[in-house]
Amino acid sequence: MRAQLVYSKVISGPGPWRNVSPCELRSVTPHHATLRPHPIWADCRSFKPFYATIVVTSVARESESATVDVLPQFVPDRRSSRTLTEQLVDGVHAAIASGALTPGDVLPPTRKLAASLGVSRSVVVSAYEQLVGENLLEATPGSGTRVTAYEASRAPAGPRAHDPDQRPASGASVSGAPIIDLRSGLPFVAPEPPRAWSRALASAARSPWSSQSPDPRGTPALRTRLAAHTRLHRGLSCSGDDVVVTSGTSEALVLITLALRRTLRRAPLVAVEDPGYRSGSDALEAAGAEIVPLAVGRRGASADSLAALHAGSPVDAVMLTPSHQFPLGGSLAEGERDRILQWALEHRVLIIEDDYDSEFRHAGPALPALAASDKHGVVAYVASLNKILSPSLRCGMLVLPSPGPLRDALLWVRESLGATVSAYTQTALAEFIGSGAFARAVARNKREYAHRRAAVLAEFAGLGVEVFASEGGLHLVAKTPTAAGAAQVAALLREQGILVETIADFSLLRPEGGIVFGYGAGSMHQLLHAVRLIAETIIGLPQFEGSGIPIR
Image 1 (cartoon, rainbow, N blue to C red):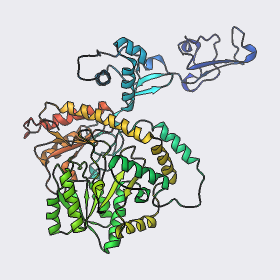
Image 2: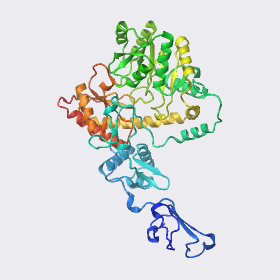
Image 3: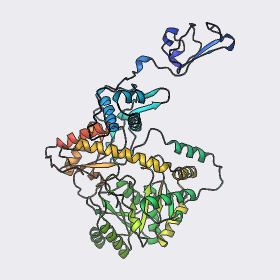
């Protein structure tokens, strides 16, 4: 039904529609235009200017966007190994990449498209939901589902580059291409926060103000929720009394370093994996620790390598990523875990377990935390919620070691520094976890990462480029013949607007060659475009010869 205008004068209307003529408004649907005659003249056949107002609330000219009746060049293949939903998602990706769908185009309603394709409506609904999550589509009640105007230059800013002077000052590369940021550590974040989070935050904001500062250890409700979640999903035997709320991994490492300094009466010597988490090493050094690199392979550290290092430089602590070594991606075998725990007990060395992305394991059974096997209190367990939900949350946890001088020192440091996470954020997060919404958000993100991982691995399949670190997490590593070759690839990609890292960026020693790239942030279209360039650039290296090694 079209809105027909009888009188020739528009009294009010926003923006460019303020004095638009009746013939232009004949194409405006009733959803966008409301005719409001004065009640006295409601039965009149024409409206008089003084008594009539046409309010245009949201009008777009028809030429600005097109409604798509069918999806261009897409035919479902029921013999394919991919599900119909996955095929439809791929079809939209292809249509956007080819230009058949452009920003602003309105996709068919789910019922109409399902009927035209001969599939169930649930297939189309699931595909639309996934594409909305990828920021490729936006769904507005009453206005349909549109292709977004998302551009590469709007990709979220990530952690600082290792060399700040080498990072572009704007959203464009040296060549002028928009930036696609695939550096590790950038998670997938939905365009809008979960409604349950918004409700929890609004509820927390209505809490009475207090003249007392929040408990430096964290609110009892959140500590109890975090302890329960950790017991259930990571196997730790802990209670709320064992948990300290932090703003993230870096703050937890600062607290541990300051506590070690207090107990040792000197700067602690801490071994860190090499290659490893450089921001963690930076946090340890900033708090006064001395760092010594521990060479690790793709399966992580070993008791033998720790013993050899300790013989030359007796360390006070070692920071490990046992469930998913960063960035090489391996995990410690059960036997090696036991040997490392025994070594730490015998030499009185604290193990700092950074359980940074354990929620997202994509291959093999779920692994318990190293701290779950700790019977003697030699492990301090560190985890963050910032990669699980959003880096803007700034909340994490530290599970204290068993009672003793170090635990007492950690509590003293925490009390001295005070709380760093707002009590309102903690209250909202406790409600969010307790309602089950947190577990649902984790499950949704895990499905998203699994889909992205599969798509990326499919792009590399058959090219002869070895890809590893795929068992879990948010990043992969593409093997290059040498570390110098990796640096060359990263520089070439940077010129094309693709930001990646190399294994050498996380190492002080002599690492193997490899490109480290994340697959969490940005749209799927951006990701697959960048991945193709990564593969092509590696294959183009003079020293590259396809190894034929299967993707792992």
